[in-house]
Length: 358
Image (cartoon, rainbow, N blue to C red):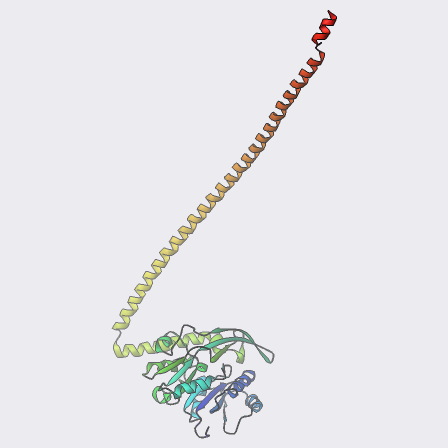
């Protein structure tokens, strides 16, 4: 590494989040790639807190630059100031609450060194967490945008698929697309990546195991919160603002004919789809009604079968009882007949006795 021109400038924006900043600085220090320079931009936060964190992680001379904004200027202004502070070959925006795999810089730098691509994004994992006292407790993880396998305009047009922690890019990119827009309170990274993907510059994507980790704290408030969570309304409004700007620029250059046609066409197709969905829903409701009616009929039939079964059981019992009585009567008559014959035979005199009496 040379002090004049490090390979990578790591720009870390922070404001009043010393616990998270401590983790982020340690994360950069754990990188297996060593030719980096960390630029911490304290955007109007307490300077004493930042100083304390940096003292906790001493670095070699010339490896750290600290910039303090007396007042908050915004995320994109902080990025631009940090980038301008170093003349590196590559740039990475490492927010104070995110982290990298230890080999992030090694693998992304090697990729760009071996290609003519202007930037490379990596597979990213969302890490949900909460702050508990002076500890950060992980809740769960999930892969961010698992369906995305390339760094493209097609994906960016829908929504931001590549967050700052996921990207390493050449400093020369700014000569082509300009700087981050400082007038945007949020989604400035998305707008920057839209301009980048709109160019003819080639962009790469490292798929496979996650190399970047986008940390989110869904229940946090105040400085520890994520803007994408607590500032969801701002994100929605600025997203709409940017789309409207692009639409106006397109209309001014190409006229409104194509826009009017496509708007009407897609609205018609959407209306047709809604009609089909409504019809299908009515059919489903009718089918459910018929199934419920059939279930009621089957239940009634089952009740009738149960009643008939009870009657048959009673009848079988009655028939069984009658058969036993009939058998007993037959045997009693047989026994009585035999007994009478025995009695009659005992009282009748024999022929020899009759002769003697005569």
